[in-house]
Image (cartoon, rainbow, N blue to C red; front, side, top):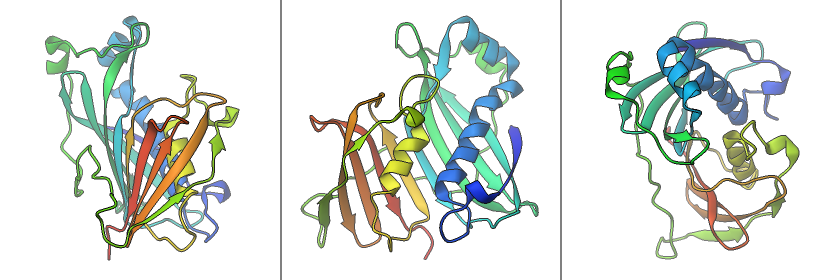
Length: 243
């Protein structure tokens, strides 16, 4: 397990004065990469073979949004590796040790030169310390899409968006938190949510145009971030987990 402390300062706040969901994701994301420091042999194997770990699906449950001045501890651990797929949990804890947000994500190990997935060698895997699962309701990698058969569904086109330099990460494609931020910006202002799920399908790069398609039914909103041909970059669902 790897830990980092983050203060909740002004840039972390949403318009209501509480910790913004996008900042929650950024804190979690900034703890995922350094997790490899706890497994130096695994990190060396990645570097030697020019490999990286990516995220293809994620779930975020927010239990409480912190206030200005609080310090949160992000904890990231890997609890399973099957073939090329890593399954990770990241939690944010307050100073009393109470969980304020939990995220589960999974994704493969990718060779940067070939684009192919690679498995962790069995001998290396046997020397890695896997953690126990965090306490959360896990809904799985695949999101059931709302369809026209769902009663009272509202379908709307979102505002077209062109990928900007500030969206691009070190791998020269749109940062995975930026997809969620863009999707959240399509929601009605009065839509409240505390759970987010996302499937990452294709990489959006600088200058590409994203066409959001919005579907809403009761307390569930789904944002399909598509290219001009209707192919999905990322599919994001927002809902209410806590009544």
